[in-house]
Image 1 (cartoon, rainbow, N blue to C red):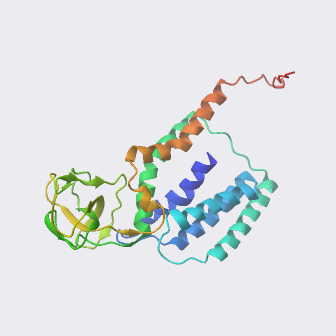
Image 2: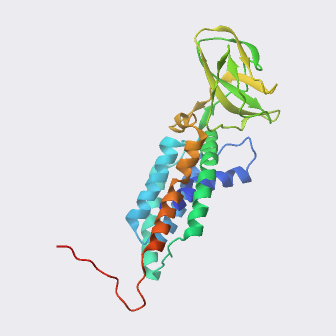
Image 3: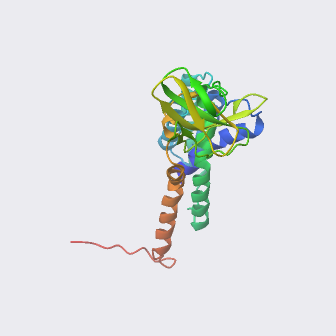
Length: 276
């Protein structure tokens, strides 16, 4: 429960907040996300009353934004680490002073966690990928159909505007590989481009890219994306949904197990079984 709530607060929430409060062509930068996490570390230490627990959670989020979702921009990492250490210490001291406690989550909260985690994972991955992109084009090799590619290697298929994001495109008769998570937001004021598939050709020269869903697709270079998130895009969508739902599923199993355990009447100590 703690881990699910923490990453929802420090990774998903700031990305969604940025998406809701900025123009679509703007990309999130790393520094505000890290300072957001420092504030969240104070809350985590306040509720858990543990410097080590909140510190580990904070370091996990910093590692995510450093290696998995390395957003653009610069950040004072040493200053943020120092501020995070101070925030966790003050939070733990305040939590012990006021003795704040949390009630265990029930079945309803577990179910909400499963749904929120499953549907939040692809969106978080998509927004993080867009923020970690350092170079992309707008279909420089032209629309789908006959195209001339300058070299052998890997290329991208972009959906333009509201085109079908999961067409059965083929390249010289061979199927292109659809992405499990499709980052968008590329392009400018004229049109929005969403990276939906990739393909590889063995030779430079003329090739034929066919998308039976109709017009609205362009061929370009594969976006340059920093961090491990670039390798996760090819994972199938059901796997990403399952990974997002795992914390809630663990919480649900725990809640169901807790409901089956007998609760002694008030004033009666719990039964203790001794084994020889």
